[in-house]
Length: 326
Image (cartoon, rainbow, N blue to C red):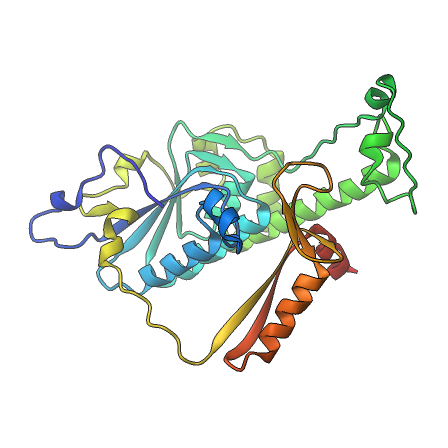
């Protein structure tokens, strides 16, 4: 997690008499998966920063006595609403012990949710503001497949079972439109509640931000979203360093001796047999799959391990989420 700002001072350029920086800059970019893949090959191919690693670093920064505050620079952050909410909570916890500022060159639904945990939200005059609510689109290939001599038979159990209609139909049916609209409404309601809670605003006012068509940083400031309109060089002082420059100054967490916590991963579609990973982006079969035999074996192994004091089942599966809701 590094940042490249030309006017950010080097460690050797700290003010006279200052041996350690008082502010740290963290660049938040990319998609931030929750955890690194357990398989060595997948972990090697995907070296993204994870939410787990980010939380560990922030926990350390919260306890460093020479640090006054942390500036988070949101740059091309591509995360889900769930991950954005996790980042929000991390910033809020850090804000209990340090001053936390979020710098937002792009003010989107996702970046605002993630940054709302900071005590101060700042955007430049040139910020891109896009608080347009949530939407989705689906591509229907029914007619295309028929024109190319491919017949796709879709046996639907009920009208809301629409996973395969994109291959059998040429438009969205009423039942699917109804459930997708309900999903989008739920996403918007959750977003409004979370942002209002973080910023101490009324939910009706926050919902008005979506409906108001804000177009620039000054309008966002007048609406109560931002605490300041400024460029990043106005926020960075002479005793500020990127996180990568202060890693050697951070203490190493002491190992916990109370016992181990086993994390059993259930990621991807749930299938019988062993877990697999198809690296090809194929519909319904691409990506990781959680095999019942593999998951059960891991749970039994953790249960029988005398040094394991707790078991966490980490679930990242669309199928599992549907089961949990019912």
